[in-house]
Length: 330
Image (cartoon, rainbow, N blue to C red; front, side, top):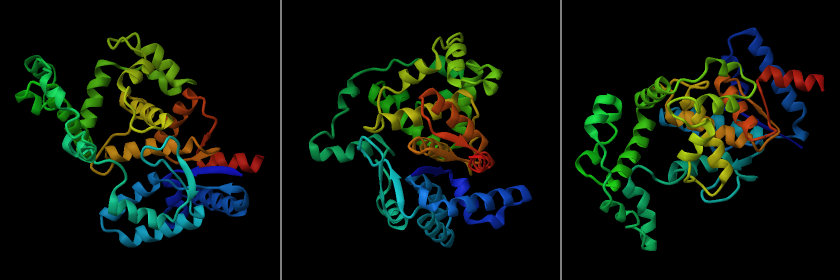
Protein backbone atom coordinates (compact mmCIF):
# COMPACT_ATOMS: atom_id res chain seq x y z
CA UNK A 1 0.00 0.00 0.00
CA UNK A 2 1.46 3.35 -1.07
CA UNK A 3 1.10 6.15 1.47
CA UNK A 4 0.46 9.54 -0.14
CA UNK A 5 0.35 12.77 1.88
CA UNK A 6 -1.23 15.80 0.20
CA UNK A 7 -0.58 19.41 1.15
CA UNK A 8 -3.67 21.52 1.75
CA UNK A 9 -3.22 23.40 -1.52
CA UNK A 10 -3.44 20.07 -3.38
CA UNK A 11 -6.63 19.02 -1.59
CA UNK A 12 -8.20 22.42 -2.25
CA UNK A 13 -7.45 22.27 -5.97
CA UNK A 14 -8.71 18.69 -6.23
CA UNK A 15 -11.95 19.75 -4.56
CA UNK A 16 -12.41 22.99 -6.50
CA UNK A 17 -10.78 22.59 -9.94
CA UNK A 18 -13.06 25.36 -11.21
CA UNK A 19 -10.86 27.85 -9.36
CA UNK A 20 -7.80 26.91 -11.39
CA UNK A 21 -6.79 29.58 -13.89
CA UNK A 22 -4.31 28.15 -16.41
CA UNK A 23 -4.96 25.31 -18.83
CA UNK A 24 -1.81 23.63 -17.56
CA UNK A 25 -3.05 23.60 -13.97
CA UNK A 26 -6.50 22.36 -15.02
CA UNK A 27 -4.92 19.51 -16.96
CA UNK A 28 -2.48 18.71 -14.12
CA UNK A 29 -5.12 18.41 -11.42
CA UNK A 30 -7.55 16.56 -13.67
CA UNK A 31 -4.79 14.02 -14.36
CA UNK A 32 -3.84 13.83 -10.68
CA UNK A 33 -7.46 13.18 -9.73
CA UNK A 34 -7.76 10.40 -12.30
CA UNK A 35 -4.55 8.78 -11.02
CA UNK A 36 -5.83 8.89 -7.43
CA UNK A 37 -9.23 7.49 -8.39
CA UNK A 38 -7.80 4.70 -10.54
CA UNK A 39 -5.29 3.71 -7.85
CA UNK A 40 -7.59 4.03 -4.86
CA UNK A 41 -7.22 0.35 -3.92
CA UNK A 42 -3.46 0.75 -3.63
CA UNK A 43 -3.30 4.23 -2.10
CA UNK A 44 -3.51 5.25 1.54
CA UNK A 45 -4.15 9.01 1.75
CA UNK A 46 -4.36 10.25 5.34
CA UNK A 47 -5.62 13.54 6.67
CA UNK A 48 -4.08 15.15 9.76
CA UNK A 49 -4.93 17.85 12.26
CA UNK A 50 -2.73 20.12 10.11
CA UNK A 51 -5.39 19.88 7.39
CA UNK A 52 -8.12 20.68 9.91
CA UNK A 53 -6.09 23.63 11.20
CA UNK A 54 -6.14 25.02 7.68
CA UNK A 55 -9.94 24.76 7.73
CA UNK A 56 -10.19 26.54 11.08
CA UNK A 57 -9.25 29.81 9.38
CA UNK A 58 -12.24 29.49 7.05
CA UNK A 59 -14.51 28.53 9.94
CA UNK A 60 -13.43 31.54 11.98
CA UNK A 61 -14.22 33.79 9.03
CA UNK A 62 -17.77 32.44 9.01
CA UNK A 63 -17.36 30.26 5.90
CA UNK A 64 -19.35 27.39 7.40
CA UNK A 65 -20.64 25.93 4.11
CA UNK A 66 -17.12 25.82 2.67
CA UNK A 67 -15.88 24.05 5.80
CA UNK A 68 -18.69 21.48 5.67
CA UNK A 69 -18.05 20.75 1.98
CA UNK A 70 -14.30 20.49 2.60
CA UNK A 71 -14.78 18.05 5.49
CA UNK A 72 -17.05 15.90 3.32
CA UNK A 73 -14.42 15.91 0.58
CA UNK A 74 -11.63 15.00 3.03
CA UNK A 75 -13.75 12.13 4.34
CA UNK A 76 -14.32 10.81 0.83
CA UNK A 77 -10.72 11.33 -0.33
CA UNK A 78 -9.09 9.70 2.71
CA UNK A 79 -11.80 7.18 3.59
CA UNK A 80 -11.52 8.64 7.11
CA UNK A 81 -7.92 7.47 7.48
CA UNK A 82 -6.19 9.86 9.87
CA UNK A 83 -2.58 10.38 10.93
CA UNK A 84 -2.52 12.35 14.17
CA UNK A 85 0.07 13.25 16.78
CA UNK A 86 -1.90 13.25 20.01
CA UNK A 87 -0.61 15.12 23.02
CA UNK A 88 1.99 13.23 25.10
CA UNK A 89 2.04 10.17 22.81
CA UNK A 90 5.40 8.97 21.55
CA UNK A 91 4.34 8.33 17.96
CA UNK A 92 1.82 9.69 15.50
CA UNK A 93 -1.22 7.42 15.30
CA UNK A 94 -2.75 5.92 12.17
CA UNK A 95 -6.42 5.15 12.67
CA UNK A 96 -9.91 5.76 11.36
CA UNK A 97 -11.57 8.94 12.56
CA UNK A 98 -14.36 10.93 10.99
CA UNK A 99 -12.86 14.35 10.11
CA UNK A 100 -16.18 16.05 10.88
CA UNK A 101 -16.19 14.58 14.40
CA UNK A 102 -12.52 15.49 14.93
CA UNK A 103 -13.04 19.03 13.66
CA UNK A 104 -15.96 19.49 16.07
CA UNK A 105 -13.77 18.14 18.89
CA UNK A 106 -11.10 20.75 18.07
CA UNK A 107 -13.73 23.50 18.07
CA UNK A 108 -15.02 22.43 21.48
CA UNK A 109 -11.83 21.41 23.25
CA UNK A 110 -8.94 22.94 21.33
CA UNK A 111 -6.00 21.03 19.92
CA UNK A 112 -3.30 21.09 22.56
CA UNK A 113 -2.27 22.89 25.73
CA UNK A 114 -3.33 26.45 26.49
CA UNK A 115 -0.09 28.45 26.30
CA UNK A 116 -1.62 31.92 26.42
CA UNK A 117 0.17 32.69 29.69
CA UNK A 118 2.38 31.06 32.30
CA UNK A 119 -0.66 30.83 34.56
CA UNK A 120 -2.60 28.97 31.83
CA UNK A 121 0.27 26.50 31.36
CA UNK A 122 0.38 25.82 35.11
CA UNK A 123 -3.39 25.51 35.52
CA UNK A 124 -3.62 21.78 34.57
CA UNK A 125 -0.76 21.02 36.99
CA UNK A 126 -2.58 22.39 40.03
CA UNK A 127 -4.53 19.18 40.58
CA UNK A 128 -1.18 17.40 40.99
CA UNK A 129 0.10 19.99 43.46
CA UNK A 130 2.48 21.50 40.88
CA UNK A 131 0.82 24.86 40.45
CA UNK A 132 3.84 26.58 42.01
CA UNK A 133 6.36 24.64 39.94
CA UNK A 134 8.14 27.72 38.58
CA UNK A 135 7.95 29.92 41.67
CA UNK A 136 11.62 29.27 42.43
CA UNK A 137 12.51 31.37 39.38
CA UNK A 138 11.03 34.40 41.13
CA UNK A 139 14.12 34.40 43.34
CA UNK A 140 16.65 34.42 40.48
CA UNK A 141 17.62 37.79 38.97
CA UNK A 142 18.08 38.20 35.21
CA UNK A 143 20.34 41.31 35.23
CA UNK A 144 19.46 42.29 31.65
CA UNK A 145 20.99 45.62 30.64
CA UNK A 146 17.96 47.31 29.06
CA UNK A 147 19.85 50.51 28.24
CA UNK A 148 22.25 48.59 26.04
CA UNK A 149 19.41 46.55 24.58
CA UNK A 150 17.36 49.66 23.73
CA UNK A 151 20.34 51.24 21.98
CA UNK A 152 20.96 48.08 19.99
CA UNK A 153 17.49 47.54 18.55
CA UNK A 154 14.08 49.06 19.17
CA UNK A 155 12.25 45.82 18.32
CA UNK A 156 14.14 43.83 20.92
CA UNK A 157 13.46 46.48 23.53
CA UNK A 158 9.72 45.80 23.23
CA UNK A 159 10.05 42.12 24.04
CA UNK A 160 10.76 42.41 27.77
CA UNK A 161 7.78 44.22 29.25
CA UNK A 162 7.43 42.45 32.60
CA UNK A 163 11.13 41.91 33.24
CA UNK A 164 11.77 45.66 33.00
CA UNK A 165 9.94 46.17 36.27
CA UNK A 166 10.53 42.74 37.81
CA UNK A 167 14.18 41.64 37.92
CA UNK A 168 13.49 37.90 38.00
CA UNK A 169 13.82 34.94 35.66
CA UNK A 170 10.13 34.28 36.26
CA UNK A 171 9.34 37.62 34.59
CA UNK A 172 11.65 36.70 31.69
CA UNK A 173 9.72 33.43 31.26
CA UNK A 174 6.46 35.38 31.21
CA UNK A 175 7.92 37.74 28.60
CA UNK A 176 8.94 34.87 26.34
CA UNK A 177 5.45 33.41 26.54
CA UNK A 178 4.08 36.84 25.63
CA UNK A 179 6.54 36.94 22.74
CA UNK A 180 5.26 33.60 21.48
CA UNK A 181 1.69 34.89 21.56
CA UNK A 182 2.76 38.13 19.85
CA UNK A 183 4.36 36.04 17.11
CA UNK A 184 1.05 34.26 16.56
CA UNK A 185 -1.01 37.44 16.25
CA UNK A 186 1.39 40.12 14.99
CA UNK A 187 3.31 39.16 11.82
CA UNK A 188 5.47 42.29 12.12
CA UNK A 189 7.14 40.89 15.24
CA UNK A 190 8.30 37.72 13.49
CA UNK A 191 9.33 39.53 10.29
CA UNK A 192 11.42 42.07 12.21
CA UNK A 193 13.06 39.47 14.45
CA UNK A 194 13.95 37.38 11.42
CA UNK A 195 15.26 40.42 9.55
CA UNK A 196 17.35 41.35 12.58
CA UNK A 197 18.88 37.88 12.69
CA UNK A 198 19.47 37.73 8.95
CA UNK A 199 21.20 41.12 8.94
CA UNK A 200 23.50 40.00 11.72
CA UNK A 201 23.97 36.44 10.43
CA UNK A 202 23.61 36.56 6.64
CA UNK A 203 23.53 33.23 4.83
CA UNK A 204 25.35 32.48 1.59
CA UNK A 205 23.14 33.29 -1.41
CA UNK A 206 24.30 30.08 -3.05
CA UNK A 207 22.35 28.11 -0.46
CA UNK A 208 19.27 28.18 -2.70
CA UNK A 209 21.07 26.09 -5.31
CA UNK A 210 22.83 23.78 -2.87
CA UNK A 211 22.42 20.02 -3.06
CA UNK A 212 22.69 19.78 0.72
CA UNK A 213 21.18 22.85 2.35
CA UNK A 214 21.81 22.11 6.03
CA UNK A 215 25.33 20.86 5.41
CA UNK A 216 26.12 24.18 3.70
CA UNK A 217 24.42 26.15 6.50
CA UNK A 218 26.51 24.25 9.04
CA UNK A 219 29.69 25.32 7.26
CA UNK A 220 28.77 28.95 6.60
CA UNK A 221 26.93 29.89 9.81
CA UNK A 222 29.79 28.65 11.99
CA UNK A 223 32.02 31.30 10.34
CA UNK A 224 29.72 34.18 11.25
CA UNK A 225 29.53 36.16 14.50
CA UNK A 226 27.08 33.50 15.71
CA UNK A 227 30.03 31.09 15.88
CA UNK A 228 27.64 28.15 15.69
CA UNK A 229 26.60 25.85 12.90
CA UNK A 230 22.95 25.57 11.91
CA UNK A 231 22.76 22.23 13.75
CA UNK A 232 24.43 23.59 16.89
CA UNK A 233 22.07 26.58 16.84
CA UNK A 234 19.10 24.21 16.63
CA UNK A 235 20.38 21.93 19.41
CA UNK A 236 21.02 24.90 21.71
CA UNK A 237 17.54 26.33 21.24
CA UNK A 238 15.57 23.08 21.33
CA UNK A 239 16.65 21.37 24.52
CA UNK A 240 13.07 21.11 25.69
CA UNK A 241 10.70 19.03 23.60
CA UNK A 242 7.13 20.07 22.86
CA UNK A 243 5.93 16.44 22.94
CA UNK A 244 7.19 12.99 23.86
CA UNK A 245 7.69 12.30 20.15
CA UNK A 246 11.28 13.33 19.43
CA UNK A 247 10.69 13.28 15.68
CA UNK A 248 7.86 15.77 16.05
CA UNK A 249 10.08 18.19 17.95
CA UNK A 250 13.01 17.82 15.58
CA UNK A 251 11.26 17.91 12.21
CA UNK A 252 9.03 20.86 13.05
CA UNK A 253 11.93 22.63 14.79
CA UNK A 254 14.35 22.30 11.86
CA UNK A 255 11.64 23.40 9.42
CA UNK A 256 10.90 26.52 11.46
CA UNK A 257 14.58 27.32 11.92
CA UNK A 258 15.21 27.07 8.17
CA UNK A 259 12.57 29.73 7.66
CA UNK A 260 13.99 31.90 10.44
CA UNK A 261 17.58 31.91 9.16
CA UNK A 262 16.39 32.88 5.68
CA UNK A 263 16.05 29.73 3.59
CA UNK A 264 12.90 29.87 1.43
CA UNK A 265 11.31 32.10 4.05
CA UNK A 266 7.64 33.00 4.04
CA UNK A 267 6.83 36.65 4.63
CA UNK A 268 4.17 36.80 7.30
CA UNK A 269 1.17 39.06 6.78
CA UNK A 270 -2.26 39.55 8.34
CA UNK A 271 -3.48 36.69 6.12
CA UNK A 272 -0.37 34.51 6.36
CA UNK A 273 0.48 34.47 10.05
CA UNK A 274 2.83 32.50 12.29
CA UNK A 275 0.26 29.74 12.79
CA UNK A 276 0.27 29.19 9.01
CA UNK A 277 4.03 28.77 9.05
CA UNK A 278 3.91 26.32 11.95
CA UNK A 279 1.12 24.43 10.23
CA UNK A 280 3.44 23.98 7.24
CA UNK A 281 5.96 22.47 9.67
CA UNK A 282 3.25 20.09 10.86
CA UNK A 283 2.57 19.00 7.26
CA UNK A 284 6.31 18.36 6.92
CA UNK A 285 6.23 16.15 10.02
CA UNK A 286 3.22 14.14 8.89
CA UNK A 287 4.52 13.78 5.35
CA UNK A 288 7.61 12.06 6.77
CA UNK A 289 5.37 9.08 7.64
CA UNK A 290 4.41 8.53 3.99
CA UNK A 291 6.05 7.46 0.73
CA UNK A 292 5.21 10.62 -1.19
CA UNK A 293 4.38 14.21 -0.32
CA UNK A 294 2.79 16.43 -2.97
CA UNK A 295 2.73 20.21 -2.65
CA UNK A 296 2.32 23.19 -4.97
CA UNK A 297 3.99 25.57 -2.51
CA UNK A 298 7.53 26.22 -3.75
CA UNK A 299 8.84 27.34 -0.35
CA UNK A 300 7.20 24.43 1.41
CA UNK A 301 8.71 22.13 -1.21
CA UNK A 302 12.26 23.41 -0.69
CA UNK A 303 12.20 23.53 3.12
CA UNK A 304 10.68 20.06 3.38
CA UNK A 305 13.23 18.55 0.99
CA UNK A 306 16.02 20.13 3.05
CA UNK A 307 14.61 18.70 6.31
CA UNK A 308 14.15 15.21 4.85
CA UNK A 309 17.63 15.16 3.36
CA UNK A 310 19.16 16.23 6.67
CA UNK A 311 17.27 13.59 8.66
CA UNK A 312 17.65 10.79 6.08
CA UNK A 313 13.89 10.55 5.53
CA UNK A 314 13.09 8.65 2.35
CA UNK A 315 9.75 10.35 1.61
CA UNK A 316 9.78 11.75 -1.93
CA UNK A 317 8.76 15.42 -2.02
CA UNK A 318 7.15 16.25 -5.34
CA UNK A 319 5.21 18.92 -7.14
CA UNK A 320 2.00 17.67 -8.81
CA UNK A 321 3.56 17.48 -12.27
CA UNK A 322 6.59 15.61 -10.93
CA UNK A 323 4.37 13.03 -9.26
CA UNK A 324 2.28 12.56 -12.40
CA UNK A 325 5.38 12.09 -14.59
CA UNK A 326 6.78 9.64 -12.04
CA UNK A 327 3.59 7.54 -12.04
CA UNK A 328 3.20 7.58 -15.81
CA UNK A 329 6.82 6.56 -16.34
CA UNK A 330 6.69 3.74 -13.78
